[in-house]
Length: 621
Image (cartoon, rainbow, N blue to C red; front, side, top):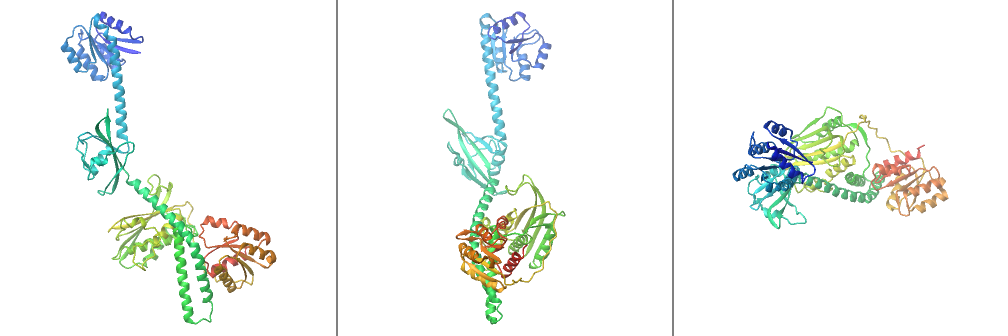
C-alpha cells in the first residue's frame, strides 16, 4: 500500500490530487494535513511513503514544510503541487532537495501520477545504492586484511583501519598522502593483472620483524582505469608456522633414515662389544692385551651410545616411563649440574610452588636438560647466567604449536646470556650431526637427541634467540592428573649363570650367531645354532625335547618372527622363545612382539642383559 501525506488546506485541491493519483494507484492511503498541529503529529509518527504539499498554506508554506521533512526524514520523497508558486520558489525548493515541482491545473495535474512513479523509483534506487554502499563499507572495514585505494594521481583515497596501520608502519603514509613508492619500490611494482594475484613480499625489521604480502589491481569502469585497489596482509605468524611444519617434516624424514641405519650398526656393535667382553674374562691374557681390549670395549660402548642418541632423535628408543613430580626433580638436577659448571657460570632456578606431575622417563628427561645446559655453558665462554624455570600453563587458544592440545602443560625454560644463534644456523640446530663447534668438541647429537626425547614424550621444543644477547629453549610436556609416584633405585645384581640348559639360537648373521655361542657358553649354557627358520624347525622336529629355550632374531629371511615362534610352540609346546632385534622399537611395537614371544632382547646386548633375559625366561612360570 502506498501511503501519501497530503499537506494542503484547500479541500478542492486535495480532491484533485486524490482523483489523479487514485486513477493510477489502486492501493493507496491518504493522510491529510490542514494545520501545523496535525503536521507535527504526523511527522512524529512517520507513517507515510510520499509527501505532496502545496506551497501557499494558511499556517505555513511549502519551503518550511520541505525543510522540516528534510530535517526529520532526509530521504523522504517530496513533490510540491501548487498554483501560487513561481520559478524562483521552484529553484529554491529544488536546491533544498525537492524531488519534483508541478503546477496546479488540469493540464499539469495529469503529470502528477507520472511524477510520483518517477520519484518513488528514484528513491528506491537511491535506497538500494545506499544499502549496497553501507554493506560494502562494512565489509571493507571488517575485512581482516588491509585494503587501500589509490586514485589516478597515486593519492591514498580510501583505507580501512588495518591498512592505516600497515601503511604507517611500512611507509609512514596515511589517507590523503601521495604514495609513489612502497618499501623502496615503485608502487607500479605491486600492480598485477587478472586472473591471478601475484603476491609481492615486504619485510620490515623495526620495531620488530614483520612480513607482509601486497597485491594491487586496476579499477576499471567502462574500459577506463580510475584508480587501483591494493590488498596488504601480515603473514608473519603464517610464515613461522610454515617454517615449523617444514622443519618438523624434515626432521621426521631424517629420523626414519637414522632408525633404519641403526639396525646394521647394532649388529656390528653386538659383535665388537660381545667378543671384547669374552676376551676380557680371560685371566691369562697379558696386561697390554687386556688394556687394548678395554679400549675396544670403551670405544664400542661409546659407539653404542651414539646410536642410542640417534635413536632418541628418531623417537625409536625404548623408554621406561613413570609418574613423578617435575619440580623436586628439577631442584635435584640443578644441584647436580651446578657442580659440573665453571665458577664463572651461575644457575638461577625458579619454579611454580605447585606440583607438576608428568609421566616420563626420568633418565631421558635428565638427558634433555643436560644437553640444554651444556649448550648454554658453551655459548658463554666468558661466563654468565643460566636461568631455568618451570611453570604450569593452561593452553587454550594461544598455542606455541598448532598441534598442541588444550589442557595443562608444564613449560621448562633454559635460557643463557650468551652469544645467541645466527639466523642461518637456526633452522638446522635440531638436525643430527649438525654442529658449529670445532673438531673434537661435539658430535652434533645433543640437541637432536633432546628434540627426539621431547617428541617421544608427546611434547614440544622451540628456541628463541637474539645474536649477542641470549638463547632460550622452551620445552613443553603434558601434565598428568596422576599423583607423583616415589621412585626407588634397585641395587645392581650380579650376572646370573645357567645350569647347563640347552638353547637353540636362530640368527642369519654369522657374527651374531658365533657371539651368542661364546657368550652363552661363558655363562654355563649349551648352545646349538640355526641360520634359517626352516633349519631351526628341522632341528626341533628331531630333538625338540632336548631344548629348554629358543632365541630367534625377529627378521629371518625365510619366515617372519611371529610365524616362526608359533611353529616352534606347535612342535615343542610351552618352550620359552626370546625375540632379539637390531631394529629400534617403540613401546607399542614391543607390546605387539610380547603377544607372540616370551621376552625381548635389544641388540647390541651385553653379556649381563643376555644372561638376565635368558634366566628370567627359563624361570618364568
